Length: 289
Image: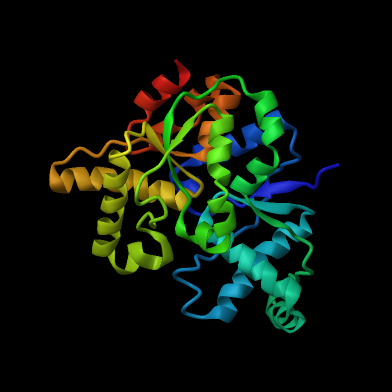
């Protein structure tokens, strides 16, 4: 029996791209993964904003989220790189450092919680890669797309070995897609580490560089593994087009969205693609032809 899992939705996906959440539970159902929704989570909290201000508060909030999962008997799967880094680092600290765990638990007891270190924290891309055979055996449609891969800086920081091993590219190839190379592949989307909030002009410049590099690759779309990267690369295209009068119209998908479609093309109508700023219909038409 596989361990029960839940999706730590974060803030961006439920508010901006709810189809990412729907896609995850559709995938879990098709693959027979024991996933269930639970309530009680808060913001992760965001590592680029909260951690520099007060680490004790940062880790206490993260630990409360871990305690919520532990209390429900589930481990956590994360579709956002920032949330993943927060929960990964907090879990590592609390399982490997008894003094820190005791200190954090003193704060948690004030809100009726305690964390014992029994939760596993996984990124969705790792979960998918671990189940490549299941994915392959359940595909209904090969997605004939040229895809520009974007990992995101938080994931690269933690798992450069997996990025070098092209973990996401292998998933996309399993789906029938063709990953394309481009010069700024490992560049930040422009939102991470508080850049979007603290230095918006720099944020825009980074995203522009990323998009221009992708345009040169002749990709049909961009595939991300993070809902915040999805937000940045999708929404900023509209902003740049308005400011500069230049056409930026590269569809952006979360890997969960593409996989859900490959498992059952009919779900495309129910994944809320109308919430995307860049029209994804041209890429979907090519993928499903």
